[in-house]
Length: 327
Image (cartoon, rainbow, N blue to C red; front, side, top):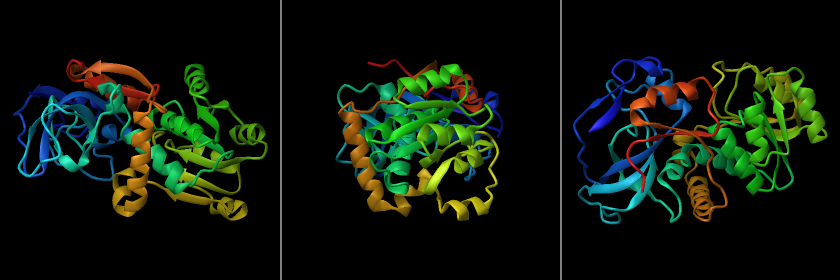
């Protein structure tokens, strides 16, 4: 089978597409014939060995997939070959076949395509946990989303509106700002322009109640300065490349809470909230009340280009690899 393989840590261009042995399932596992795989910023970091966890070489990158079950391992009784499923996993999605723990799989709702299912996992789960369980968003609150045209950001805009919040989207450039408005943001701010703190306060009539930040870099402090007293700032990642240094006097003076969310460990850290959030999220996706924006699609052979688009923060919404023909 064909797979994208990381044989040496480095940039997306160092990855190779080659033939590798097809996997077999162990106890409690299934083999999925991958139809679509979504690209996420952590995939770039993992391939470069810049993530929180080092993956031993060689490995197949990719953390989100969808497809059909083709084989089940011993002890797997609730899933059958032919079923349409999607899943999130640490690595292994950028291949024609992937072994997945049966407990990690979710059936794809009728009417949802393989591409949509692959694109909805990590980013929507991150945004849902951040809003529902970490920030405890309430109807009518102002939510500021940094990087609002990216994968996590666009999911956060979508979900914040579902929760009845008012959204300020911060992104860079006219095309990204237009997408944010089309997704329902009340205000769209170019955060590369001067005066971000002032513009946040002006359009929210006093400041944001919640900030979701998957970007970091120089924008985090300006967003924090643009918050109301008693708000919640949720740090989700550092796509800008730099981990921000926050003056703690701002936290003291504003009485804000700064909280972090690592989606990889959230289910272990908060199992009850995780189960509740996942049930709610799956229902919303099945009902078509939320849906990922897929801005670009690439064949498996062009996985390096897809990863480069995400690495350079040029993607609009999610980037998806079409591993095999959809149906």
